[in-house]
Image (cartoon, rainbow, N blue to C red; front, top):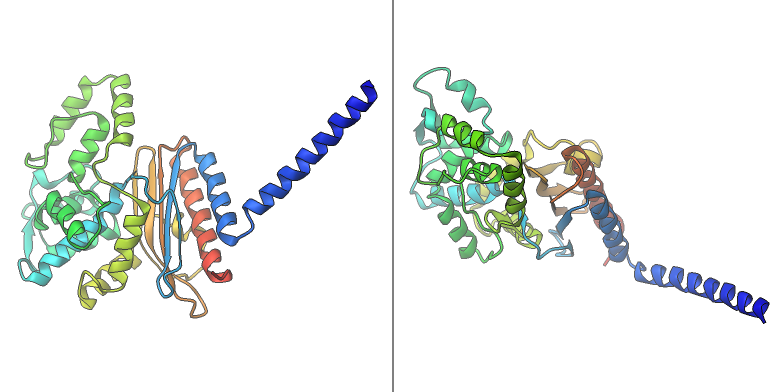
Length: 337
């Protein structure tokens, strides 16, 4: 009797194992299922949340993962800022040739070229110069000056609503966003930035208070977007729906020359692949969003990859973005609907 029970247990175990394998294969019997499972696996590696949005621009075929979850945009929010800025150019309210005097209070955390230029007094840059620096090297001072010329954060968000995008919110210039992430709450969009004040306020904070601020930042709905909304914005730029062809091409040209994130979307794509993109990084957030041209007249795809609350370092997150981008590239190139 005991032998029969043992045999029955082994038999049932084999049946359950085989059924589990069959079920697993059934669950992943389409290219979309396999891609989803692959991204789920990468998400587990990050220990955080991965959001993906992609659209084949010629056919409209799409793939999403966590498409309606909000993610901190970090510097990818500079694309909405650029859209609003260029919209005002088209209305004739500002011109790309307008010259802006750079003051010491315009020098914000995360600035590169502008900070070196300020060694010389009387620096004046055109709005076009600032737009290029905001996208090309993600200069935060340039971004905040562009946002100011664009009418402020509220005007950028309002522009998103006007073009039918409800899940992109731009709420703060970069210096306020960074201060909030660090736990300093004394800065606002209407208040000039002062380096010494940030340093002074940071000295007051304990390590525990900074960690609490970082955790709160991850849950903050300000300056966030869903993968679906960001993908739609990029599609509208490509299709010249929100800007003239001239200004859409101008923005895409700058994005193609973006100097950051070589190991993200571009990281595992074939050499020479044309990518128009913008990166974003802050704390446990690592992002890259853009448009990738496929070979063999196969069209182009929007690629949005957001990672938040990652438990791995930024370098590892960048590798995961590269892996997912390559998987999307192959998905659209080698599979049909």
